Length: 78
Image (tube, rainbow, N blue to C red):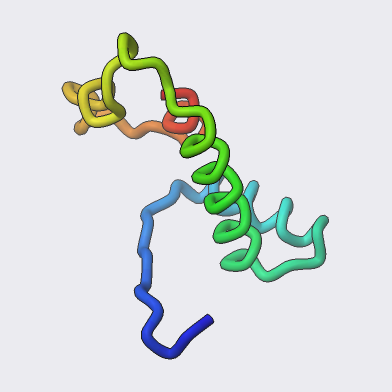
């Protein structure tokens, strides 16, 4: 990673953080590395196979849910 890399912060529930920590342990990776690799893999898949337009943008689907606490699985399904 270059010295000029940006930082990404996210809020997670304790349960979500524990799930990520456990998965990272199973892969023998630090949590940050596991999350970065998983996010980049998902980004490449999404770029290669964009979601269908009729479903609407992620922002549109999240509208009205801003006050609800969504779990990682729920967000990934959106």
